[in-house]
Length: 430
Ligand code: TRP
Image (cartoon, rainbow, N blue to C red; front, top):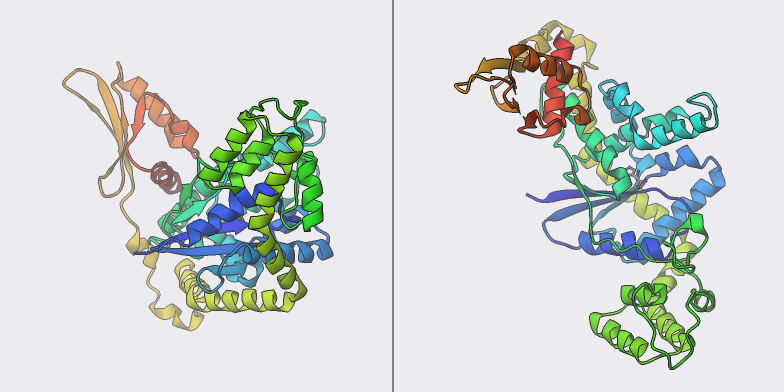
């Protein structure tokens, strides 16, 4: 079975070398592996949460699309599309919204950080916070679930969102009694290089220390020559460790070239020379991409055509049939057929999960949580009294978040999302 890997790209401004080395280049390389089906999309609906200038939204979307294509993404081999071209995503978002727990969304990092900032400034908790920011994780879950993605590579800041996508998917599956959605796995690339910027800090737009990926040759040269170095003169050995210049070279060179460059550092290469070599290395890799980028930007209608075609195919092959199935599943049905609609969900209702308390030969009191089929979900340690065990049960019955399951008094024997879904089922039935 091929594995579906889905990557969402929020269009915001023009990419820089750090984005290229840390995200674009590795993602495109990974998309070429066999046995995987890659989905890459421009999260333009998400971008509206932050940027509400229409001309800028259009421009960013075009620039990011052209960037990924110029860097080698092959739109005949991967699914490359625009989020807003799949309207079924927003419909699915609503189906997920109604099973999503608001409490879980309250705990989303991005939303919580915004609330914390308001509190610091003694404003109302939700001052200036849009419902869009609050619902962000549900839209993201819809992006993932609509194509039944198995793996989602993301940065650390997005891990929680993938956990939420699992949670919403699991709840939907549970409430409507079928495995509509596989639960997506988060993929974190530990190796991901973060590139240092001009001033030696991490390259980032917020530090104003970036080198634009498609800067013209002359501008690239000027920027490379402005990289911060120490005051050692030519002839003095230079440290490779902690050198932004060396690290950048490494990101664009083979191991052999890097070793030779390290030799030159030890041998006292002058900074001007080192910068010239770095510039030539980067330019050698980027100049064909820059040419492609400029050609693509000159013909935006070609990009538009690619995105539309792929979006349309995705709708026809996956999104439209899936939504048809889901609409039926939730009960948005042809009313003329109501006569033969047995109260299906009553019949299909699976047995409820169950807490079981018992005493072992060691004289201590234990409990476990079993799902409707008797599968073990949680296993407690021994307690001195049944009351102690009962108290912990009461606490976890209320838990609608994974953190509540992290106690040494108990082991989670399966996927946390499964346990949370079982607890939710118990609460729903209560
Ligand atoms: N939120 C992601 C980011 O800012 C972009 C994104 C939107 C995404 N929807 C997604 C990523 C679905 C992965 C899966 O990086």
